[in-house]
Amino acid sequence: MLLAANIALSVAMLAVFALGAGGIYLWAKRGEKQRGLLMLAAAIVILANVLIWTVPNSS
Image (cartoon, rainbow, N blue to C red; front, top):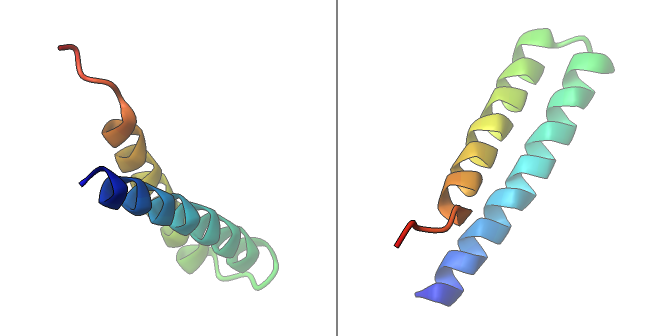
């Protein structure tokens, strides 16, 4: 189970970088503001999920 969780977190972080870079590219270079911002929002949501998963338990 631990291996699967580590792989899932790694894939999620790769998705964050890809969505962030793609969103910035679409917004800045191609002028597609709506799609770029949606990709950046998706990256922020996935990043928040990764941060929640990695916070240690209080017990």
